[in-house]
Image 1 (tube, rainbow, N blue to C red):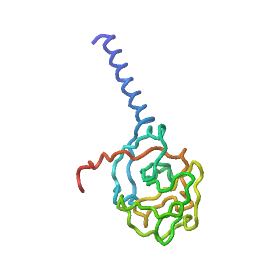
Image 2 (image 1 turned 60 degrees about the vertical axis):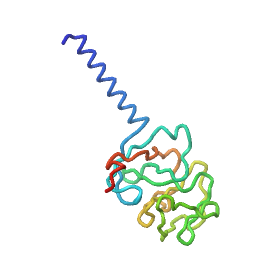
Image 3 (image 1 turned 45 degrees about the vertical axis):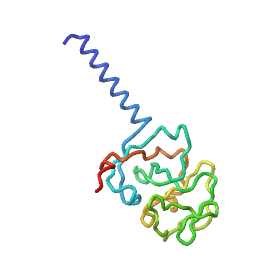
Image 4 (image 1 turned 120 degrees about the horizontal axis):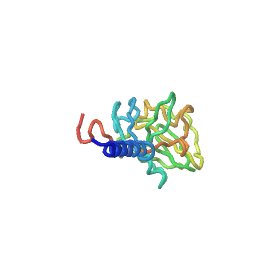
Length: 172
């Protein structure tokens, strides 16, 4: 190989590395589910690809599964329940948005909520705040608890886009 070919390979490899790093930084990133707060939707150990670019073009929506920073350099993966400006309250184990019962059984969420936390009283979200909960409500550390609280828009890292491992079409 001559110097020109070697330089060509170095430039090619450098471009691939830079492109890959840009994809990871701005477009998508792999994240792993830790714990069982999102069961039955997601299982402990599931590998996900997080869409980091979509929310630059549109706002998060109710029932999106999002990723945001958690305690001790970990990430939380939770479902958006309440949107900015809405009032969230948990009454008799059920979630109410602006005084109306939230129908969220589409996602297999049927658990009675034993601990309403800060949503035991009406909680009005700020203009950039989201109320998020895990699908496995009895064990989820989520927006009901002061250590998590409502999630600011600026804290949302992205939306859980697709499960890559185990493959979505393989039933455990």
